Amino acid sequence: MSEILAQILKLPCGAVLPNRLAKAAMTEGLATPRGVPTAELDRLYGLWSDGGAGLLLSGNIQVDADHLERPGNVVIDREPDAQMHDALARWARAATRNGNHFWAQISHAGRQTQKIVNAHPKAPSAVKLGLPGGQFGQPVALTIPEIEEIVRRFGVCAAAVKAAGFTGVQVHAAHGYLLSEFLSPRSNRRTDCYGGELANRARVLLEAVASVRSAVGPDFPVSVKLNSADFQRGGFDFQDSLQVAAWLEEASVDLIEISGGTYEQPRLMGMEGIEEVQEQKVARSTMMREAYFVDFALAMQEKVAIPLMVTGGFRRREAMEQAIAGGGADLVGLGRPMCVMTDAPSQLLAGLQELPRYENELALLPAYLSFLTRIKTVRAIASFAVQFWYYAQLDMLGTQGRAEPSLSVFAALRRVMALQKKLLSAR
Image (cartoon, rainbow, N blue to C red):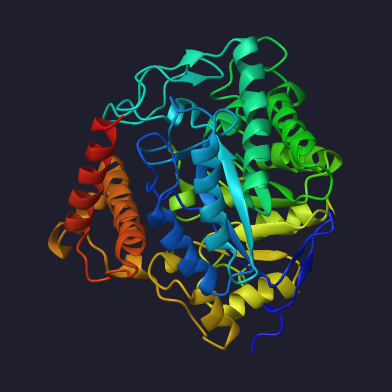
């Protein structure tokens, strides 16, 4: 048995996680068209609760029905009625049935709302997402009253999930969604109190955290998912992240999850290496190179005492143990492996040496055309197609209780696109 991974983790608020393995947040797309949790979500999270992780993080729970990261997101944008409360409570019971924690990831998609959901999403500034294909519309800059309403909704959502039986919350301030957009000078061109210097760009995040903390009280875990960097010139960089982490510690946050990237530079999907790390003057760790963001966490540990979670790239148990023992992480997040191997944490705790990398077996293009992936647009399409394969696995876990690793990328694409079309037509 892995003694290191089996250690408990006590958080500043007093809550205790039963081990050092977490199921990272992954978008599920399994809610009703109106954003209500379903039996499919219950089945999926019941499987993950049975799988041995000390913590399960939900996918995006949106605070605005007009700003979905994808169709099928859960939405809590007001105080829930009895039906919504009951659905949330069933979900929470299934997700905690083995004594693990279950935290709600609270989010607002901002300009990364697909055009099929909202052609003119709200954002810090009217700066369009720099991606080909026309999937995202021209955003509209938020007014200050609209920002204040969004901040209020973060608190409303946190109170609702706590009342339903969730055991914690995570404020999503990474991956280019709204709070991350405010942090980056590339997407935040405001000249008022929410733009300009870093303290202003971080203001809405800190206000959202304060709203959540006020709603749940001092003894309930509150975490934040934060980019280590955007990996784009002129964007949110590592020194900015260090300062924001210090402010979050002062704001009584219990855990920071380190991640990185946006849709424009998607380090979160593992599409490329981390060459920009050297540009940020952060040493690359050879012993822990499996984890994309461990080096950032090591540097952050020198600045803050708050526990850190690192997600991205972990497959070998040895690397996970080294990350924790070496101070690079307090908690290890697992994502893609758990889309197929739902009991990956239990297997690691029992001695499994390495988790599979399913993406290594997936190929959108035949080998003789692989040279086309050198083209940035083709590479992006291929990476998103692989992402849809994982979406399809989550759908099958939720609907039939088992994954289908033999499913082709093209079959997965067809399945997910059909599901999204069905959800959109019923809105």
